[in-house]
Image (cartoon, rainbow, N blue to C red):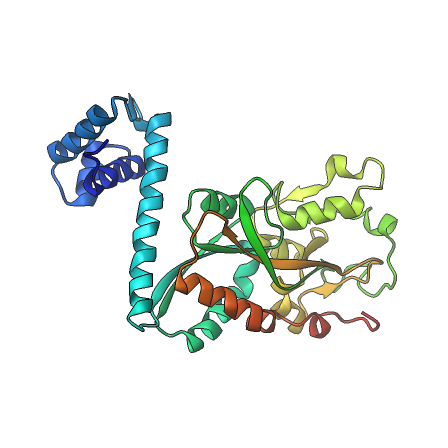
Length: 312
């Protein structure tokens, strides 16, 4: 494949993204015949079909996916090269694609603002998703670095802790347990839980907490798609929720939610920054990693201020 070039790889990327030759051509500013020729030349050179023609559009074959992965890695290396050249020139510039799980969106903007004061010429793009979406972004190289509460085991990653991640049980202020102290695990287990989707970090922690109670995990509670929805449902009196303390600062301050005094809580986890082990660290990525090590914990809401009970 000595005749392989960037134009061909970018045509393959555009076809994958848009699904048709016409749409890919529009995105690239080319004519459909020009994109067709690029694809044909690449398939002839590789002696293999890269896309299946279906009623729903063009779908990459296994070979197509291999080319797409290579194209992504080449694009990343070219961007890294640009950052490295700027660093050699003495320019403190660059870009960073930062993925954060949805729970982290409550502090990520403050973190970005603090980072920008030290590195005003590094552009940070923020990508927010649930745990599964951020893991997929890491797998596809769509993000340079991610912030999450529990790094996955099926992706080759380097991870580093940058702060504590306390998880608490919340209820509406008029809930019968709102003024109770030392609530047992057995007592709280009788409540209706409002929970995130299967696989989320908070849900997994709740399952571990309740796992010793026979049958309790068979019908854990009412599943909801976001922390915001869960908070609104708790305020409406639909149940209690196990949630990151970093998501509820405002609601606690205005008296819309309370933290329940459950024995064994808060459960203290940690926040991690993760990057793929097969990624070369760009100057921008290294700068953000260094920032997290120095100031990351300072950008997190203080559990001592949020937690209302003494002795915690």
